[in-house]
Image (cartoon, rainbow, N blue to C red):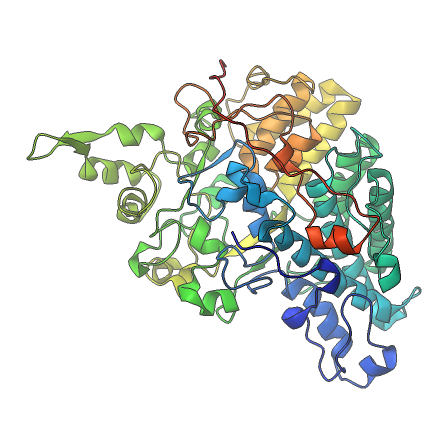
Length: 566
């Protein structure tokens, strides 16, 4: 893995923003003046638009990394650190986060990657806020509201990625340094990591202002936050803080105007999780002009890693090169057959279909497997090719995810430049419902169970409360919270919440058990969140910022754990 080359303090925005004819500015702390912006027609709005347009489809760090395509790559990085998502091979592009490689340490690009990108996104927000001023006029209010909402979201992510313990477990645990539009270069050189207490107060303060500034704002699509998204972010924040009354309040407010995905929408073979619908509150879509689509055969994109059914093009890490993500076998086996979400994942039993070839060898029964795959895909030959003929991983299809479908209809399955142009959800109403349910149940468990049962029955009409509490090696939470967590693991699989929930609930992970599909030598069981879930701060930051401490470089277990008995 490549070592880092530059300090986070020296990060520039480069192409992250469109600045019109504003003169070049120094990075991180120099901002255009209002006069400069007024002299450049549309410049302020360009800066506001840059806050979100930089989130997807751009090379933000290096063209050398196929996973450098924007915000959703952090979903995959976080999710593979746990147990619910399995990579197929130790050479997978996301293997560093799955295998607890030494490259997670502060001297390597893996540490630089999130640090560089998140602080550059924060810089975009700070630029707009500097121009808007402390009391924005009407022409700057909406832009300031968007900047505040997004800055809060970015810091919320960073706090959860870098703090060794979450707010409810340790309010004094350190997160990351706070940099605002008023932070000077000298202050950045002596800027300690904010405690959870300080960071989450700062996040709530930003969201309070964002809620005020975005009142009445009507967005053109879900690619920018409006007041409902602010409510959703507040629900997330209070959820982490275990302020249950406020988590309930804002989760309810966030749901207004949205409806849950139906079974047809969830399992749609052409639009499933690639097209916004009435449940999506915030999300973005890849465009044909995005650098990550135009360059390198579009291989460095979310679709390349998540869409299996694009084999006709011969491109794509998941569809053609053998780098897939699968569901953890035990989690899959806990999903009842009556729960329609189970149909998002290929049955492991399909790999047991074999035949005898002319040499008398037992080989996969291609015809029988493809016939079974028709239950999951209109392109079963492509799914078969992905698993059995795709390259590096073992010849299997069991556990493969078909939750995220290729975009563009029939053309998208043979042309990656069309198929990879899917949208990605950043926030769905189902998440808000599950936050509300947990928050209600932590105040009144019987009411929470009632709400949870109502939710679960929209996915599984035969759902019975209490089936998912005995499968954990760490009872750090109540039976009720364990049930909610199970619903979150299934409902939000692949959407970036796995590590956050493990840390929030102080859970361990279980990869070693009978018949596991986790990779050998990485079959680890822990009683509490593993150290590799606490990201290291890039070394150049701690060298240049004398007040900034760091998390220790995680050390991988020396051998597989004994098999856990469920």
